[in-house]
Amino acid sequence: MLFALSCRIPVPEMPIVTDATTSELHGRPWFPALAPLVERDDLLIPLRTPISMPTGRIINDVPGVFMRFPRWTGDAFADDFGKKAAGMVELGGEHLFAELAVLRLLEKEGWAGRWVNTVGGKGEVWKYLTEWTDVPRQEQRNRVLEDPEPRQLLARVAQMNRPARYAGCWDTFAWRGDDFVFFGCRKTGPKPAQLPANQEDWLRSALYVGDERLTLRSFCAVQWDYR
Image (tube, rainbow, N blue to C red; front, side, top):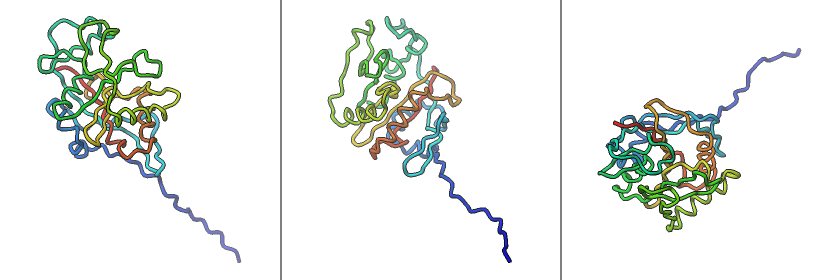
């Protein structure tokens, strides 16, 4: 006699990874630098397309913070990329874009970095910036990466990120010792706002490089507004 057995063989599920908890953020080496201006540290920014890691891990979102910056009350920059509303941050009496304000906060804690500006770069870096003065963009000073470690790490991600290369690189790139971090800055409210598609591609490429210094802990979406 034959017996028909109806059974379901369990199929192991891919683990869905979300490691962007508040406690995790507080433990990240860059967090104390930004903390004084952070209003929310619990943002989870959902990805359009989850990232499947070679280990089987699936990443569905990226951690984020919401910050409030003091507003600059003087004149706008002579050249502000046509984004006057986003170029009126003030820190310590200095007129800044948010990307540089994040950098200034990090510098106070011993980090070095650049605003990796790719506007009009067609896949390449237009300029590496540490300041923005009140002159036309063509006259802004390009501060190339002289330290080989961050320069090579950035180049490896761009190599992986073909054909876009540097397009989509997160705005502020900073390093201190063996720690490297990317911040994507966006003026918006405190609710999670989706990343631009090319920034998702950059994130995916960075994680696929396979360097232990580049993990999800190396990325933070900075949503911000004025006080």
